[in-house]
Amino acid sequence: MKAVIIGGGVAGPVAAMALQKAGIDSTLYDAHPISAHGVGATMGLSTNGLAALQILGVHRAVADAGFPCPRGVMWLGDGRRLGEDVPTPLPDGITAIQLLRADLYAVLHECAATRGVRIEHGRRLVKVDHRGDQVVARFADGGEAVGDVLIGADGMRSATRQFVAPGAPRPRYCGIFGTSGFAHGLDLDTEPGTFHMVFGKRAFFGYVQREDGCVWWFVNVPATREPAPAELAAIPAEQWRHRLRELLVVDASPAARIIQATPPGYGWFVSHQMKAPKTWHRGRAVLIGDAAHVTSPSSGQGAAMAIEDAMELARCLRDLPLAQALPAYQRLREGRLRKVHVGAQQVNRSKSATGVGRVLRDAMFPVLMKRFGSPQALAWLYDHRIDFDSTVVPGTG
Ligand SMILES: Cc1cc2nc3c(=O)[nH]c(=O)nc-3n(C[C@H](O)[C@H](O)[C@H](O)COP(=O)(O)OP(=O)(O)OC[C@H]3O[C@@H](n4cnc5c(N)ncnc54)[C@H](O)[C@@H]3O)c2cc1C
Image 1 (cartoon, rainbow, N blue to C red):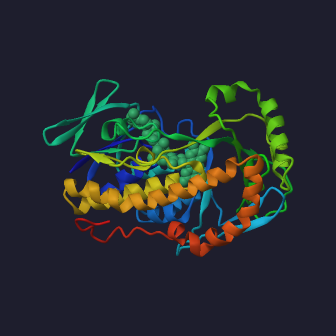
Image 2: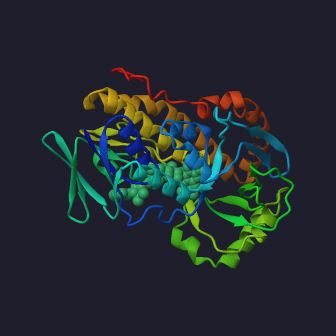
Image 3: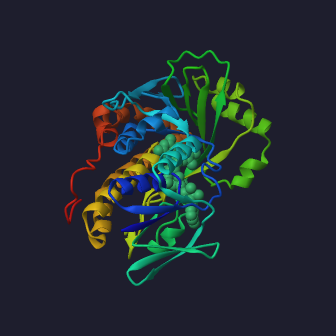
């Protein structure tokens, strides 16, 4: 079997390495001329995602590209501590990490390339066709690639999705936009590697200090109307710094000080989420990662879900004929994805609450956290492990 993989972000290189482990040959095509393009934001990778990478023996390389973040603590803007989140480390001691999205892309590419995966940059998919028993990827440069299966790992604005599920819902704005940055020279009363999440009065703020003292942070600002990227970029950085400080200074957290200690200059992101379409495959084409289901950054799980998808799809393609493998893959993944999306929606609602909604949130939060924020309540998410060696049987899921 030969696989054509479209997209070399997170899901694509992982799928290529997982297919290789399953004895399936693949070539990866990405639209951009280089890897790790324009993805400057910071991100977290949780233990479930790292455990899936461990199957391929690349989790340590990925962990080394970031820094350990074994503990998350949640706060309200008035200084009340809501609870903490300490996912069980992997047996070799690796814990959740923070890293740059660009570094995750780069290290996954490097691992795949070192293993002999063929990667072609500057190849933008524009159309998917079937020709007899094969599937054909057509590129903007006029070229094509032919395979037995086409894996759409081409992210939130997937071109493959337009072929697989033309009626799929579009990614929906989640009510928040944000930016991230790095601050130096601060003396914060915090343990390195503890990620603080502050559900503030006017905005949400996350921050963590590295061993070397550098503070990584991000902010989510509520806005009912989705801002256009150009609109955000048009506001001068100094003005933004002032605005961010105004939003954060009302909270009992070091957020405003962190903003002040960060040189102004911001890259903006607008949060989206998209429910998976009814069917994730059509003919010989199938969707994985954000192409199948956009998981909003608030879940902290978009990359981990993309990695898990890639691993499960490779298992299914290894063990079942294509016509059974693609539905089996979807069945294995869709329930878990639905749960992650519901969780992210709840977090987004809490982050975007203003006025009375925010007062209600602050009253309810401590109670909800006790029930849904405990390590036991979150074990389904972080302790999920893919049994790659076990055989997928027809009708599985
Ligand atoms: C600001 C921000 C913060 C985030 N924080 C987190 C976090 O903390 N934790 C987490 O797990 N996730 C986080 N995410 C989400 C995570 O980055 C995504 O869920 C993840 O990257 C999805 O991987 P993917 O491979 O499916 O898609 P992508 O990483 O988007 O990769 C898609 C690839 O497809 C290529 N491509 C696109 N169109 C075409 C085409 N037509 N032809 C060929 N190639 C194409 C692109 O060039 C790209 O390389 C965050 C996202 C954002 C924006």
